[in-house]
Image (cartoon, rainbow over all chains, first blue to last red):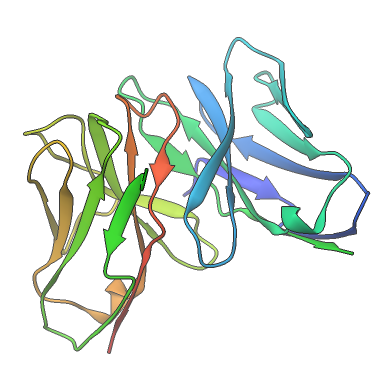
Length: 111
Length: 113
């Protein structure tokens, strides 16, 4: 079974709205990362949050981490059509650092 | 700066055929990875190479072999393709251990008939 699971599986919003997606995981983590994948392309790293951090920002992205609940959220503020993509969380749980990916949230932003 | 380059982009094989997927990175990264992506399942790690000269199995290594040819190149070989290996394959690299971010190639879409 997967370590990380995103919720919702799909999200449809209009430009200018905020998009929030969540990631839950099962075992203790070293860090948690979020990636974006545009259709037919490879994944692009968005942000990394370490287990001792609670919140990080990068441009219009805000990531929170609650290790007590084993969950993380990704907020995209003021969405644009270009934000249409799939978003994946990935966790690092072992000492070496292998990433385990969730199944992703598909986000569609309509103009 | 090309980053991570994968070839080919598309491939169709018949059951039992063999092929090698090529991957090269120009970022002087130590670690390289092969993932497969199937609908609704996210990415699963097939093999990884922590550094030049080393390779290790990931979650789903059966039916695959890898070669870390040098620091730049990491190839994935299917010796006898099966329909269950129909997937999109991604190569990735990182400076060192995957505790830091990964850089991905654009993928190879493989169909096994």
